[in-house]
Image (cartoon, rainbow, N blue to C red; front, side, top):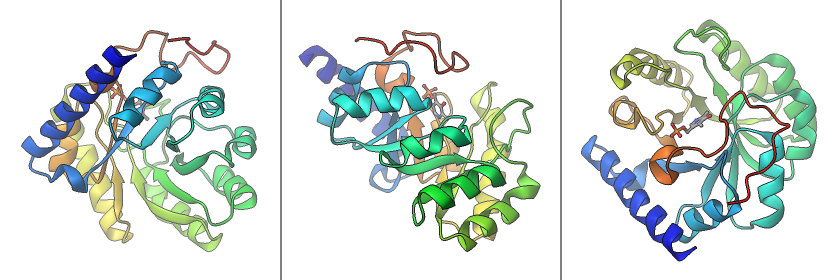
Length: 229
Ligand SMILES: *Cc1c(COP(=O)(O)O)cnc(C)c1O
């Protein structure tokens, strides 16, 4: 456990240094630790390193970890089914992946006043989460009218080399400017420098903090068991 804590603390420093090298004050870019695929000990380790924002991609994993670890400010960053919203409401402080009207309605119904980001599919990748850039304004308006606190926009950069994510990140920042939204959640382990250069206010980091995920990652679905490490 101590080894894990030391390793994670060192990795947190390295990530903050990467943010600084990309030209931002690390204190002004929120570091969100993505713990999907890892067990509760990793959440404890990142908390011990002073990171309080922790994100999960699967409802069941978030619930399982929240049941045994207290202290994180939980973010939900994965594909979200409307029928999962209700049980996540007591746990989630920032919904990062709101991407369609039905989900916006369910959130407004179950968690009036909660904070959310609208996820935008800036890379126009089929089968990926996020609404079409052309639909962002309408969705943001719907959320605002239903008393959801829309804090900003979120995007996933895509699979290619980091530089390939730049146009999408730039588009996200432009959309956020236009809608007067402060938060731009963009940048992951592989492309955080490009995201910071394009004005990220929040990076979501998994592998650069914890190493490769031990269990089958995205797409593995809800059914898999919570890893025990
Ligand atoms: C897994 C995931 C991350 C973290 O990705 P890493 O490459 O491990 O840093 C960030 N955002 C979302 C939406 C994710 O699903």
